[in-house]
Amino acid sequence: MFRALLFGIPVGITFVDCVGYVAKVDGVSMQPSLNPDLSATSDFVFLSRWSWRKFNYSRGDVVSLISPKNPNQAIIKRVIGLEGDLVKTLGYRRKYLRVPRGHFWVEGDHTGHSLDSNHFGPVALGLITAKATSIVWPPHRWGPLESYIPGGRQPLNSEPLKNNAFCDDLGEFIE
Image 1 (cartoon, rainbow, N blue to C red):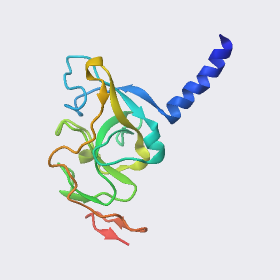
Image 2 (cartoon, one colour):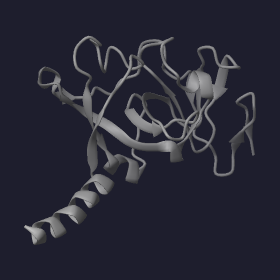
Image 3 (cartoon, rainbow, N blue to C red):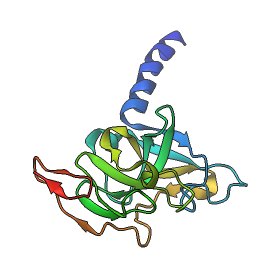
Image 4 (spheres, rainbow, N blue to C red):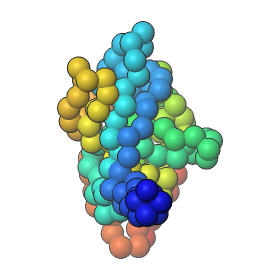
């Protein structure tokens, strides 16, 4: 028994650190994709650390990240814009913003009920901890988590940032 425990703990830690883990999703910010009915049980999702390790994210992916407002809190949001994308914001201090190098623009699916990039701006890549790939609980909701961009939220244009280019406050490139 002790040998199994001695072997099992490092294997479990390695799995969680390298492959992924299951997490409970609280709140309404990702409705209807997650927690569509708050009176029922909360959704549990599988968070893949594999994507995080390879920085393999696309527009429309649902990601877990450390909250820029509260570093002790993890939040879950959808990637709307990648670095270089020009996004139309919803209530941010500027109407349009070019996502700077090393950042993402993330939003909750439930517009107006989400603390997201429209409140705290572009999110540093380093705050992203995992990609949500599937709903694992409740059983009637089992399945892959769809990667899509909600209607009207697509970036206005995408321009890859040049090697040393950064964006100023107006979203213009500075070389």
